[in-house]
Length: 309
Ligand SMILES: Nc1nc2c(ncn2[C@@H]2O[C@H](COP(=O)(O)OP(=O)(O)OP(=O)(O)O)[C@@H](O)[C@H]2O)c(=O)[nH]1
Ligand SMILES: [Mg+2]
Image (cartoon, rainbow, N blue to C red; front, side, top):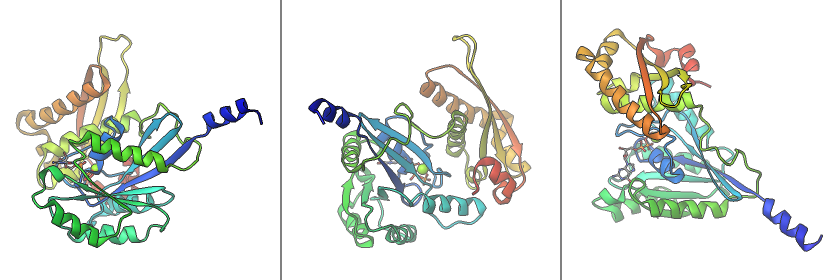
């Protein structure tokens, strides 16, 4: 083969790897995913169990591609939705090239961390597992906590960071992961950042806002379906998005709407602002609160929402 041909062959050689992000609820998995990508693909909230499905976020740099899989927080399930979420974690640990195990350095490990560690022990030995010790900037005893996590499971590497604030640390992790991506064709086109439809993505932004605003059990009794998205004919007009907010009972509906519609207005305002910033366009967000009795235990409803299988 001539030198020219050798060179050409090198240029088209591609590397691509699947990387799972796992940990108990609320440790910062989705925050890390969004910051690894530099765009918001996954919802984030201060409440546990925000992420419900395995969301793929894709990062491409030259001839290398990383496919990150953000998983729901692994937890003790209490209903069919919780079972589905835990299954999403287990299923996404197959066929991967590396795992990022996130923990919250503010506290020592608890039972949920111990269940995650048991899950990690079942992963094929050849797959590297990186311990990401997160929230270091707000941890009082980071060294002591880190030691306890390291005792739980012997990871191949450890990164101590703030996924929220320390972009440099996040990018250093990303650079290391680019180095271990195996030789593979790209699994996604190089301009794609997520495998979600735009409707699903917008629904997650609305659900994120609902989770932030609602209290007690209510955030968990909500699902959002975007069933209409209309791009405007003329650029000065807004994008029209219709979102159904599902609740389990009539009294939930009352609480989501709030006195004089105050709560739904707040939820809508925050969601619309986010959508407008992320889409760099005006958005008309039309929301409707619908009662689907006990949808979290209703297999047909779970299938319709994509929370089954
Ligand atoms: N101080 C601090 N807060 C963080 C950091 N990373 C994430 N958070 C916050 O922790 C909360 C949970 O973050 P998420 O990214 O939704 O956590 P998650 O692990 O995806 O949660 P689930 O989807 O519920 O399992 C949010 O309020 C984040 O802003 C960090 O490095 N430092
Ligand atoms: Mg999450």
